[in-house]
Amino acid sequence: AMSEALRVVQPVRIPSDDPIAPDVRPWHGIQRRDLVAMAIMPTLLLAGMTSTFTDLARPFVVNELASDRYRYQWVPGCTLFGSVCGMALIAWMRGRFGLKASYVIGLILFGLGSLACATTPNMELLGVGRFIQGWGNGMVVTTVLAVFWREFPDHRDGAVAAYVLGLYFGRIVAPSVSAYLINLPSWRAIFYFNVPIAAASVVLTYHLLQPD
Image 1 (spheres, rainbow, N blue to C red):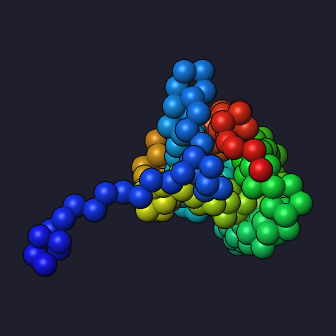
Image 2 (image 1 turned 180 degrees about the vertical axis):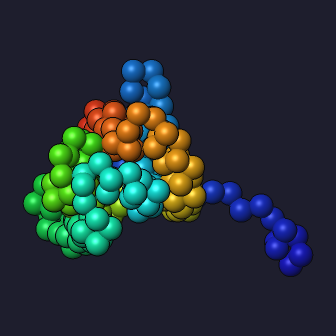
Image 3 (image 1 turned 30 degrees about the vertical axis):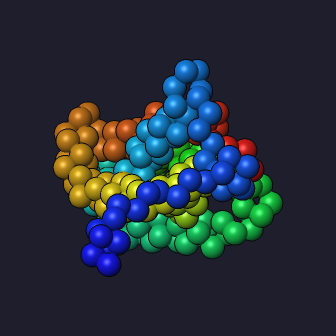
């Protein structure tokens, strides 16, 4: 009985014709799933950062846009409302467009919202930009775990760990990164920072993720 208890359990092999068998085909000579993980993790970090990224920038935003702190309160409200909308409609989006397309659309909305925030001339359009950014962020956060599970069916525990690590590590480093970016020529750098990362993730995930 003791020897049975101490016996090392071999991992279960998933038959190649099984519907949940992982797609391990190489992409340009590189393990595709490794590239998928590298493309998704920066997006998860951004998703985690978004919740607290603009806290330190508040006085600079209020001063440059000639507003006040009371009107600024609508900006985080627009962000939360956009996130709720993106999360609430993801089931409809996935049923109509598929998981891959929903994830990529979320990334595109996040990037466009960030660009709108970076170029906004007033507080009202900043709220609109944050709404769009929040909508995309809500779609990404909701779909990325499903993407992980589909890409790594044989390592779903690791997929969950990577999901949680990306989101919460992003929240941890957000104040430090935000403080550094604010010291650049303008507070708008905290939004410009998102654009190239989101654009690169769109290109990579569009080519790397499994089709629906």
